[in-house]
Length: 174
Image (tube, rainbow, N blue to C red; front, top):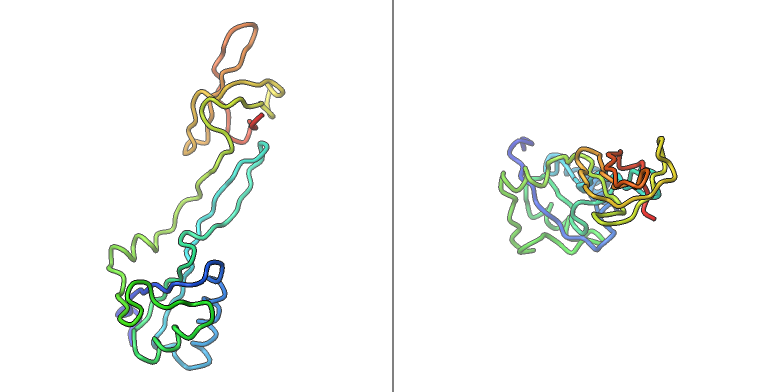
């Protein structure tokens, strides 16, 4: 079968078994000679930058925990193989009559996402500046612009409230 004619299907797995199921699928496809029916297996992930104590930490997390996406031609043989894998509940939706994803759905699920940043503080929180000329000063978060990697902090300098814009990693929650 031509890979362009294959469709995306969604398998439900036990939570935390996504990678094991994916690995079992890839191993089994080779062992059973199903390479002409199953073309791709994905466990969608995204890279996230998390800021803790003023340091950026990169981590990867699963976008859809408990699901594995498979691009294949659905036959009885492939259905039986996939539903017999340990850790796999079966197909999402109707397990006996799997429905492929529409083109719109497969685009949404297949999109590679830009790394997003999680910060441990929010508007109104008191933070300490840990880098730069104002290191050691503390203030209140006035504005937060995560896409631009900026935080605006109100700092008391010489008795006056002064707005200071800094990189997200230059402040830490007090």
